[in-house]
Amino acid sequence: MTSEPYKRYRDTVVEKLQKAFRQEKEIQCAAKWIANTLKNEGWIYTSGTGHSHMFAEEIFYRAGGFARVQPILDPDLMLHKDASGSTEVERREGYAQKLLKPFRINSNDVFIISSNSGRNPVSIEMAQFAKEKGAKVIVITNYLHSKSVDSRHSSGLKLFQVCDLFLDNFGEIGDASISFEGLEGRVGATSTVIGAALLQAIMVQAVGLLLEEGITPEVFISSNSDIGEAHNEALLAKYKKEVKIL
Image: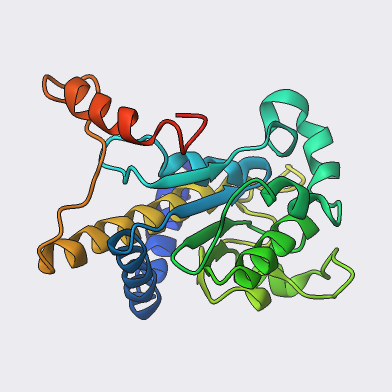
């Protein structure tokens, strides 16, 4: 008997999570770069276009998240302003350079870029820009999907080819994972749940590395807890001038 659809999705996600967490060297390397960045008072820059912008929000101003995070959350690349329009914007060459110009990215920093397909110019040029400035570039992408499509950038390169390190979300081509008889296309995207888990795993590992060196990292605590409000206010007072959207 065919299992319930939600169980099929559950099993699919569990299988992909198991594969994703076998990327132990990549997780440990990314965490080491994050720890070094924070040790040297650098910044964790992070961005994504379309639905992938959620990964930038996942580690920004989040309970348990690092304070030194600079998200690139451009409304024209997100969904809440003009969803279909954001698809057009992420394909514009030259847009990333203008977007990143105000940020002082340097060799002390890490830039995390999330893109399921890894084929669109904005994400590719963000990675190139950050590398030119000396930052380490970490990418979360769907390697299978990315290999199956052509780049939309004039260089012919895709995001996994221009970064320092990439982690695979082991998604399906097209992201959605569950098929139904009589339904064209599939449902049940997996990139968000896998990507968020990888991101949080990297951050947790980085905390462990810092504590091993006797460094207590600055992290936010839930403002809905009894101790969180005062703790967070101190971090906001320290960083609000540098992170404009805090």
